Image (cartoon, rainbow, N blue to C red):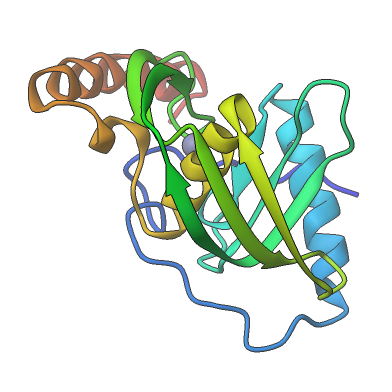
Length: 171
Ligand code: ZN
């Protein structure tokens, strides 16, 4: 297992649409494990391939006190309801927005890390994580879901935090 480097917004491939897996090979379980370890190391609840430099349609997530899950080639089949809630992102550490709109219920199908298909329904916080991570596969980050004024404020804050982070790490 290994902790991977997390790509910071707006570096590649974060703002690009990720490619599907043609087939889920033997490397997929190891990739999922490394992504879960990376997510845990940063106290995150979700992490998508583009955030670790892999422009492929894969994400992992973990709800508190639950087993982590891996979604490969996910498709959102149904979305229902709307509520605003707080979100952050490991690609924009230290930045949060309170009013990110998401559906309250989603139905999603995907392959697990072994390539086995599954389908599930999620509500509330889990539904929010799934939508946030799915957006990463489309090159969309949570500020893109905000109204244009709030988005501008969040991105301005991020520009400052990013500069501090990069100068602290000697880049
Ligand atoms: Zn994110």
